[in-house]
Length: 239
Image (tube, rainbow, N blue to C red):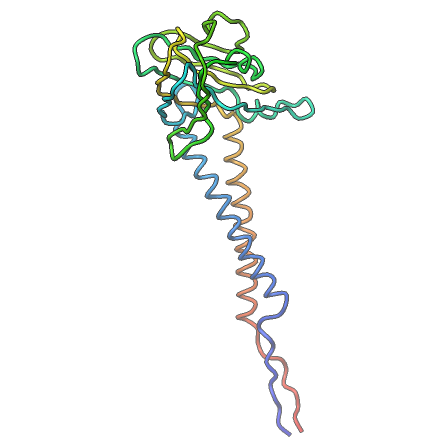
């Protein structure tokens, strides 16, 4: 009678599941860590005033004003989530022509009424870094922008103008005009925000990514090592 050695299967269902799960978690951890690193690099570009700014973009369009499309800010059950995430925002605008510039933010209904019948251009998208516009034909404004009182935030004058706004709920429109209302409008603009939650977001991404990385490595190493160490079973007598 001879004894026959039966090989113990190296890849059991548990080991396969461990390796597959470890591989998936490894990819997720890399994504989280990469996201944290990208945000950390961006955060390092903050200015001395605490704002993270975009590069300057040329805004130039026919009409007596350049506006944004209406953007809506909503709070959730009384909690100012946008404010906590975005913080204060800043718009920096420099006219590329001589003469004073006006920059203002107001409820969209007020802006719509002010620009009714006035020729202006609304930024409706971007091609690369270049804005595209929806041009509305019309005449000159009947009132100078600085003479109306509905602006939530505004600035007017020569040189570079800086508009600071603490985010709050509502439907809003930004407006850039020559202070005397003449057309066209030509300027360089950059936007930024303090992003108070950025540091916590970076930390959460890096920590969660690191934890998942450790779990993934444990599953992968455990599954692979246990499979490689799988030895033969006890000999089975043969007849």
